[in-house]
Length: 245
Ligand code: B12
Image (cartoon, rainbow, N blue to C red; front, side):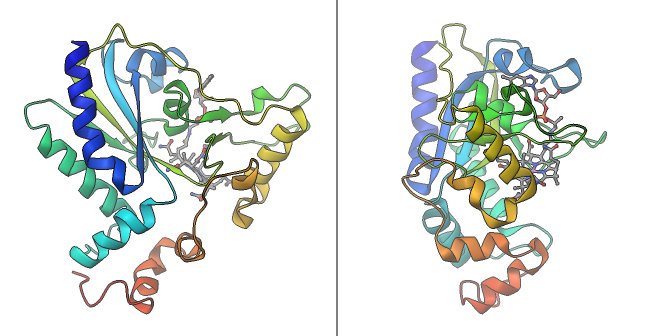
């Protein structure tokens, strides 16, 4: 079984690694263990899954080539289309496996997200999920404070895109690695959560630690544009020419 996982992982990495994605394995049981039953994923505890992150290079390595080569469907967000295109290639290359792919933007009929991306990233050891309860002297009173994941190399300059589950692959042997705790002091954690909750539009929470690479100006402009206007922006930048179907 260990050999089987090694081969599976290699096939996924071969597809995604040079495109600006990172993958981290986890057992579904680690995820379910920190969540209330309403959020549990219906698989056995030892079931293998991978959390998929996009890092700054994804924009040039996967997204731009995708725009040049593929007609876009107008109703869907172009980046989401690019990610699902690449994961569908992964699925094809693993045609002998049962694979369930969940995207960060998918909602269930009860309006709950299909999976909690930050919890998955934390338990897989990909990026530490800083939450209000990680701050001892909490200054926020009645306010609702959302948590944020910080990646040891990219700070906040990444996104959590998908969870890929292999329902038939059981990995009891998989060791759990804790995420790297890179925002250690109370002051920094308070600053991080303040920035993420009240100033997320100025990008500053993403720089809470020194990073090895961040989004280019072009990528920032793209993500700062409201989703409905992104197609227009791509046309202006000449990235997408009359290919909107
Ligand atoms: C709905 C949503 C929003 C909503 C509500 C936010 C929220 N957190 O509830 C709104 C619209 C406000 C929002 C805004 C933003 N969002 Co948003 N959002 C989401 C989405 C789709 C679902 C989040 C959610 O509903 N969580 C449900 C709540 C209940 O979960 P929770 O707070 O984590 O609580 C659970 C944990 O605490 C867990 N738990 C309990 N104990 C323990 C212990 C441990 C150790 C662990 C790990 C877990 C755990 O149990 C709780 C559930 O009972 C996620 C993608 C996804 N599918 O997860 C993106 C996501 C959280 N958003 C993201 C971002 C970047 C943003 C924005 C900056 C806008 C943007 N996209 O650029 C802003 C910033 C916030 C702000 N200032 O407004 C990123 C965060 C990336 C990161 N580095 O962490 C995500 C992950 C999307 C992505 N693709 O990367 N968002």
